[in-house]
Length: 303
Ligand SMILES: [Zn+2]
Image (cartoon, rainbow, N blue to C red; front, side, top):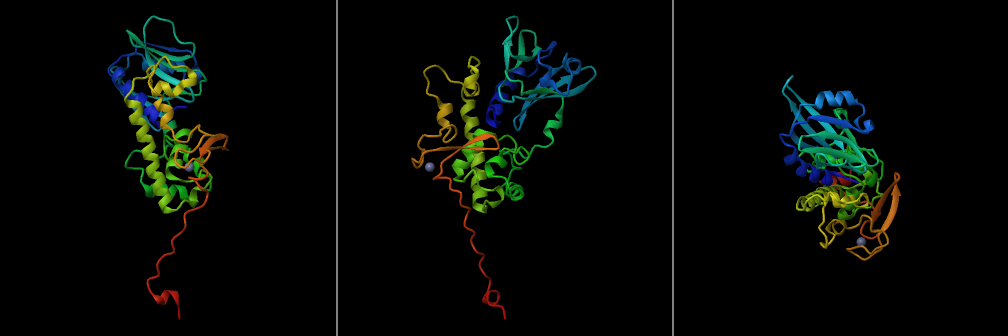
């Protein structure tokens, strides 16, 4: 399932391909992905519009378009859901079976394909309102992170998936960040000590940055099947080692030895989602609170 790095990689690939391209026709095969926008609204707004930028916010793609008459800027909000993909296809040939929306750009077509239709392709920007800070931006500080965590009794792994805490983390990178920080996924969010918060804050930024760097160096693999979604974003040429899977240290490795200590990696279900962790590197215990130094004996031995 695509998370922040996969969406960022896709945005970087799409931005130069779409820049300046004009939409001639709009085909909607699965109106469900548009909700609450209607087919008519989408066609009326998009036909004749030109792509001016493609950006990302959390796991959303923000496609900005300009229209000349009447002069206006339009924003399309895309979400890949569980199985969504966006790419350019040469004009004329057959469409993929699960093409949800197709935008005719003349020589090529922009396709939003989604086999399970959990994705979105809509003019409704209210989806963005509740998003927390971007984890790789300066807005996401250890202080902001700490304050938000202190309000939650949820296990830290579950809380990390809350898009209003920090935008863009999903199941894979939440497990990976907790492993890197050596924090148990079961620890209550508000019980993290100051050092643990800082370590987790750093780990989140590191795992996301590394994944983006990894994905940005390879071409998208449009031929990948649905079982290999990762390869779409982290494309792999035939015969080249599988760097996408190797990059993950704990996710989907239950039963295998921990890469750090050799303990068997465990799988746990939290809020109906799988969590992977090393019971040895990620102990449940909370950080030992260091007692504050007394300023003088007067405090310690009140009269
Ligand atoms: Zn371990």
